[in-house]
Amino acid sequence: MTSTTKLPRTSTASLPLYFLLGNLLLAFFWVAAPAFAEEAPLFIAEYEGKYSGMLVKSTRKLIHKNDANFVLKSKIKNAFASIEEQSDFTIEKGVLIPQNYHYKRSIFAFKADENLKFDWQKNIAEYRRKKKPEKNKDHELSPGILDPALYQLQLQREVFHGKNNIAVTFAKSTKIKSLYFINKGEEPLKIADQTYPAVKLERDNKDDEKQTRLWFIPALNYQVAKVEHVEENGDAYTILLTRYESDPKLIPLIYDSLPPESN
Image (cartoon, rainbow, N blue to C red; front, side, top):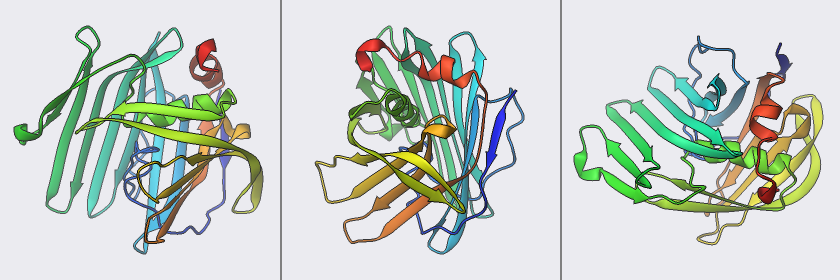
């Protein structure tokens, strides 16, 4: 049985293409594609915002395949662009372990097909880009490293367990990157005509003056409900949650499994 929360349509400010599609860290949003036709998801979350005056929608979906195997997907499409992202991962002793990350985008004539394969026996993440072998690169892995989509799910887990200072590290095409966030506590978050208590995270940005803030709603299983990003020139972008559906198994399978030492 699933529970569904439908939030009324709301107007939003513009948002950066790079932030939520796996870059809840990491994302590119356009008009959402048709619904996924697979196993019942542990959660499905839909978001809405604007970019350069264009309405944008995105969908995130988490699937439990079997035992310790999971898939996190984003799928976006409109007349001008399509973007797909998939993270295949396992959970072992409460730790999210990426196995393979696939990213495809097509924007007008520009296309990219990228893959990160995580070889934990060799402790190597192999980045490969189709038709551009000169960009291929291997990264050395250490325990706890995630992929560009999976670190967003890890943020939700950390907030669920009340962490105040959160660090996430993930492999991307060119390097291993770490992000740091500070828990700013609870504040009311209004989405359309509904107000929820929400936990606010703020990125501790050590490299530039950009600002990133995220809000998580405890009543919706700590799903990301709002992402706000401010560029150095003052341009501000926002995305908001518009619909959320979850399975009761989400909490024991994903959140309760976080290792005690991470709490």
